[in-house]
Length: 134
Image (cartoon, rainbow, N blue to C red; front, top):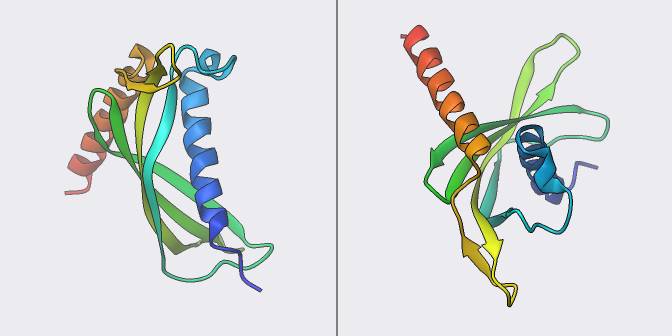
């Protein structure tokens, strides 16, 4: 049979977490006292099915960014033996950076400086790539 649709959401979360871990690994130690990223909403739009033993590539891109929140765009590709990519799905993931008050309630908080710097760099690279493709 095909790959269960919920795997796409799991892949989305793992790729997002790996991206943030590469930027701020210390924030993944402990119980989130330095802040954490919470998913507000996510979706995946499927174009075709993936099958067991397919090699899947998941690409994350920053779509929009505000002080405490961001929307990420995801694309899912099957990698064929000849090196070509077949788009399987695409999706979005809206998240907010929070800290917790004494009762444990999430409070929207600005992204850490290192994350903001990475977002600035991502936006700059996207602008350069867009200029080069005109």
